Every structure is written in C-alpha cells, then in structure tokens.
Length: 365
Image (tube, rainbow, N blue to C red; front, side, top):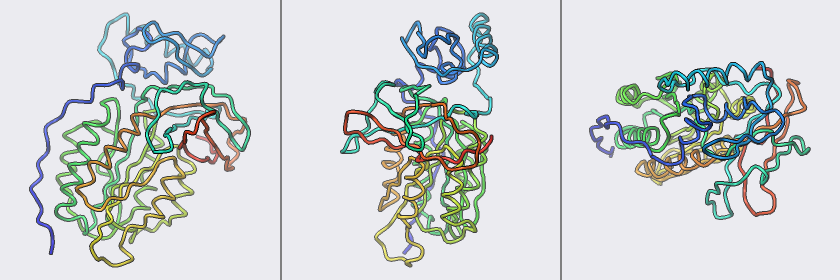
C-alpha cells in the first residue's frame, strides 16, 4: 500500500548559520573585498615567506604565484576598499593550474568525530610515495560549489519525495553558507540538469515543486553528466551529493566509467541511500558497495538510512563535514602526463584519520 503524499510548500528563506564560516572570507586582510580568502592566500604580495600577516586574523599561509598574476587581484582589492563599494561575488571560473595541486581533506578521530583547527605543520602530503611540501593551507571554511543529484524514479513517490525536498532545502539554505553555490540534477531513467550554478532559494523551490517521480534509476549517468559543471565552477572546493533509494537500473555508463571519470575531478562525492527493510526486488535494492567505491575513492562517504525521514539527519552530518574541512595545496613535479598519481594525506603523531581523494590523472586544463 502506497504512503499518502503530504502537500509540499516551499519554505520561506531561513537565517544562515552564523558561525566562523564567513569571517575570513570578507575581511581577512582589512579590505572590503570579495576575493575569497583562498585566493588572497594565493596572491599574497610578500614572496619572501610562506606566511602572511593579516591585521585582523593573524598569520595565514599562501602559495607562491608570479607578480604578474597577483598584481591585478591586489589592485582590484585596493580599489574596492578605496571606493567602499558593496562586496561583489567572485564570478571567475576556478582553475587550480598545472603547478599547484589542490586538496580538500576531512580529519576525524577513531570514533569518527571531526577534528578542526589543526595547523599547517600537522599535515604531510605524499604523491606517488614521495613527501611534498605543503605550499598552501587554510583551516578556515572555504566556499564550495556543490552539485545535488536527486533520484526521482517511481520508487521515490509520496512521502519519500516530500522528505527529500525538505531535506534538500534545509541542507542548502540553513546548513551550508550563503557564499556557496549549487546546481540541481534530477535523475530517473535519464538525468536532467534543472538549474545551473545558483544560490537562489526561489529557483530551487520551483525546481523541487515540479518533480514527479517516474521511471528507473540512472545514478552513474547523473554523476558523469554533472562533472563538466563541477569543472567550470567558481568556488574553490567541489562536492557532489547523491540522494537515492535504489540501485542503478538505467544508466548507459558503468561503475568503472564513473570511477575513471572521477580520477579527473577534484570533487568529493557523498551519497545518502534509502535502503528500506520492506520487501523489494533484489536488482532494485541499494547497491551500497558500489556507492562506497565511488564515494571513498573521492574522499567522500556513503550514508545508508532506512527511511526517508532520516534524510535530514544524514544530510546534516554531511553539511557539518563540509563546514569543517581543510584545504591544502602543493607543487607537483609532474606535468600533464596523462598518468595516474596516487595521493596520501597524513596527520603526523596522532591517531587521526584523513579522508581525501586518493589520486588523480594529470590532464591539461
């Protein structure tokens, strides 16, 4: 017997979480400039040291970039400060470049509790087994570009789609930050991109309200179709969040295709899967092993819940993780050779666990 759907109405905008998220992003160097803290670290004017003194927040770490690249950014910030203009969102397309390899890392203890506030000196990076110098680092929250991939197959009817709508809205507009951007992809027997990069509440509400579950499930196709958008984001960090209640039944892509494609992306992949104890055909049940292979290799993880009512709690845990990550960079000796290079990030001297992408294929951007 099908659960009866409750009417869903778009919720009014909710206040943002007011914590340490935005502080260093808007005024880290005493300038009212929307160039984000990570970019400020990249374009620090002092080349003699890899430390930068902030008049308000103390020392920050930066990477070494040529003056010809730094100067336009510094002048832009100074002009913005002099004219006292309102902050302007940075709309440039992000590119990590050939020399600097950027990493996002999550640190937990043995019980899975998030560890925050570690200094640069606590981290060690290894590429192909060789230790690398940490050239750039921040333990403050860095804005994220996130793709949300929502299952709208026929099994998501009724209460499941209503709970998913509520969880998605809360995740994006209450638990994350207003400096973040996202796009929405809905998938059944084929994926459909419903929004481009946005941070608009009304646009998401319209897209969610129009969803009508039907058809099969194409998780693999949805992930692969989302990667070009991830590559053309204008936020430093990247992530995908997949919400589904079943196994892939309709993709033309395979699990191997997805894993291969993710080697060329720096996105963390998270999955929340509804695996109800109710009887259902074996070939449509959640394939937890496949999801874990996808998410763990990227640095993300998979949550399995038994009911759509658990979606809010599961997405809240993922949001907490996204709000507590570290961003590191190092200068790789490898150029765009088209080969796979393994990466390991360690925290020395303590029994902490670090999750990050486990490698990449060096391809030109």
